Image (tube, rainbow, N blue to C red; front, top):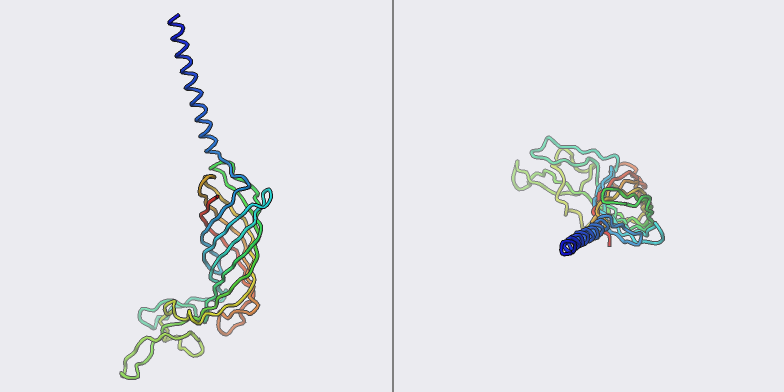
Length: 255
């Protein structure tokens, strides 16, 4: 009887240990495959790059119904003209490159609202989720004048020169005397706003641990409309619509 009891006790301990191990493994497995429900909110921030310019953006999504989300997105990027051509004045000592004929820089601050729909939800840490979205809103254009460093003759000292920072105007400044751009702070006080409209649509690909941070790559199309036709390049008819494909990378969090 003692032997049988001892064997039963040992068998019971083994079964109990296996049961505890199974329950712990099941819990860990459930945590590993923790699924984001469509009630989860999220936010992300990252960098945006396109042929028209680069910048930063932030996005917040809030569930609406089912697989749909309400989106708030804000970005600040530069907007370039397709006519821009960078040159270097090799007649000067230690010059820096600048864009010939570009008299103003244009930056676009875009607060936008829209909708996002989940096409493919992440099922595990090794899978990729896919969202599609469409956003629209106001585009606040900031037109900042460009200043350049120019070689100037010192009127008090014969054959002596000094560097003078002037607002760039190709019609009045000899390009052979230009060293390059002045410091960025030059002209900030003369920045002028211009209102416009913006539109963004694309697809978001995201991956990561569902109960923590995630990463995403986004591709899409971006359009800015400025009816006042901001003057970026000198001597040409500048555009009112700037459109381009873009790609962005962001770090995000579900909450």
